[in-house]
Amino acid sequence: MKKRVGPSPGVRTEGGGRGVVSQASQGAQSLNASGRPRSQRQVVAVILMWRGRIGLFKRSGTVQHDAGLWHCITGYLDADSDPVRQAIQEIWEETLLPARALEQLTAGPTLRLADPRGGPDWTVHTFLACTSQRRLTLNWEHKAYRWVWPWKLSQFDGQVVWLTDVLRAVDSLPSAKARDRAAY
Image 1: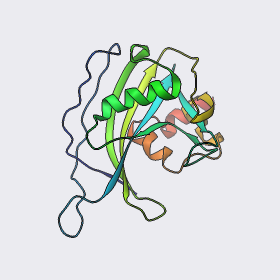
Image 2: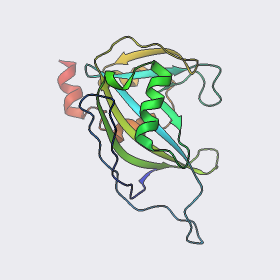
Image 3: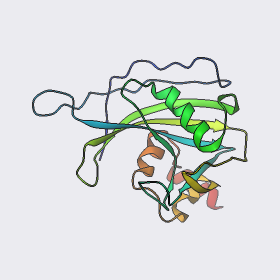
Image 4: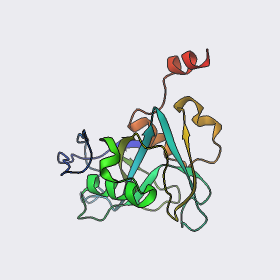
């Protein structure tokens, strides 16, 4: 289930990447029965693209969640942290791409996703980042990466359950027409 939460303040970046563009998400904040904001865990999720291809990252066995599964770049967001800054930090930590190597960083909608184990909901701040740098240096969180055409994503078994939600949020999944055109 995918719902948007917010409203979020407008996001801005200070320095860093060339041509960085961002936008705020919209929607209503989720409240519990007493009218207080629901307990939520916050993360950033970044879809990294190179020349129209999506970066998929295979989680290493040393991570606590989703080991061995294909995922995007993610990281926890502290309550007082700025999602844009955290997204840039996670890109750097997981790939060694500096902010100046990003041609674009766009904030997508903020998603609220239910925890499959019944824990607090996840608040996912989505981003789309584009780079012209093909080669990446991975940290301990991932053991491999692949640049994948969007219409070939289904060939990668073992994806994190909510990766599709993030891809849809930042419009990185091809339409049926685009898939049909690519097949010819």
